Amino acid sequence: MIRKGSTGLFLATGYGDALTEKESLIKVFTQCGLGNRDMISFPSAVLDGYVIYGETWELKDNAVLPVCCTCLTSDSPGTIISACIGMGLPLDPGKSALLETFSGFCSPEEAVLEVEKLLKNSSEQRNMDLKDLRFKCVEHKVANFGAVAALCPFFRKEMELNGSMA
Image (tube, rainbow, N blue to C red; front, side):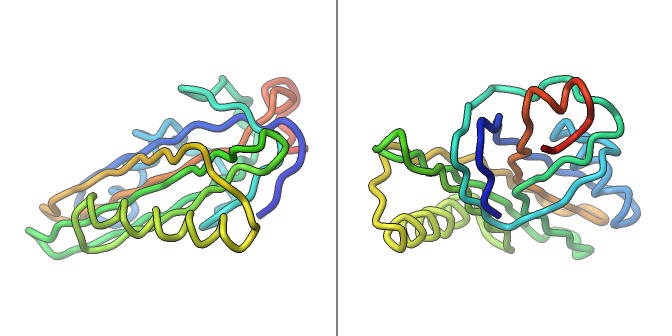
């Protein structure tokens, strides 16, 4: 996905365990601050014009939120699952920010390495130098039905007022 204009960003992770996949995913997205919000999901993104925030704004309930996201579920007790999202910030402020995601049956350290590779490949394809790489990861040991997610919602100030993605 490619977004233009000033887009607010924050990285979030969550994990959950429940008796069903649906219940564990609800726990995950609630931890990430998204609750029952409607979302459009992308595994990676290129963002022109961005502002980095520590947390999301309060958005109207009817706002459909675009999200760069990866999630993974497992119903195998004792299994370790991880999810990671990474952001590559360009050296040139006129260039785009990059987002990449990975989830798997691995440690968070292995997930970071995979996301780092994806960010470096993405920047090389665009002939872009990165000044900073930021990661947020989560790991969970499955008890019943486990889930993990790593994500970055995209939002604009206008969404706070009218619920529109534009």
